[in-house]
Length: 99
Image (cartoon, rainbow, N blue to C red; front, side, top):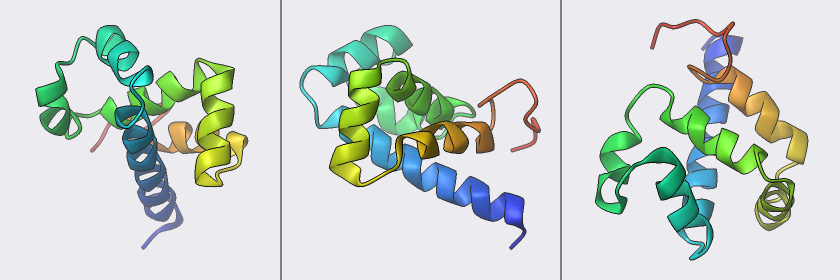
């Protein structure tokens, strides 16, 4: 496995943990759904779309208290969330568009 593929795999795993964190929080989930326009029953399907996992990490990063709580509850260094975002498709404008 290439280094880039390994980084992407780790980033996807972190984003999936972040999605679980958001989904389990009765305050964050409605805010996430409102911002993304996704309906709760559509999350599983949406998770397969390019850019969805990057969007989950962007949501976490957009609110520092949420980022810090996620980091504490999951044992994830806060800066790892931004690094993971950059490793995902549509995580920034410079990322390869191939999926």
